[in-house]
Picture 1 (cartoon, rainbow, N blue to C red):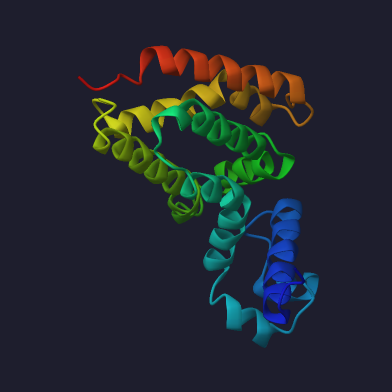
Picture 2 (picture 1 turned 90 degrees about the vertical axis):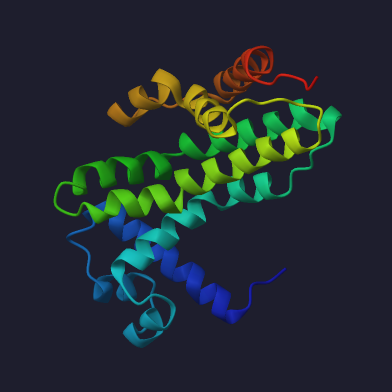
Length: 204
């Protein structure tokens, strides 16, 4: 489907903003420079985004869209749990180890001391949204009566933490280290197997 003109402009703005943020940092990029990079007029830019913070939040949300959409579409059928977790894990791994996701993470860590609101903006736009959806999924599993997950919030947090592990930190510290497709597949399989044994308890 061909995007509507307004959607095309919004996407162009997000792509331009992402390029500028990653190339020059947050503090060194003005809304005028983003408009030039899109390219759109400043009036058009402000029609979609009223501040640089709002634009950065949208860039992060766009990056996370595939993962959040995957989680929104999950069912709670008992025989789909392993398949669902595998879909979520695969989508999460594909997101957090992309070059752009790692670069934005590094950018926000570097900028947060001078712009502390950026850390909260990043958390709310990406990780918190994913954690909330994951927690809701586990609660829905409990509501079926077939599972007894004692603490859905902790279960959600531990799930994503295991997927990141030490590898994510090493990738953040190196601009060349990124897992291969086979390494990501193996990571997902190991996390799901461990998680199903240790966290998901069937109801009584």
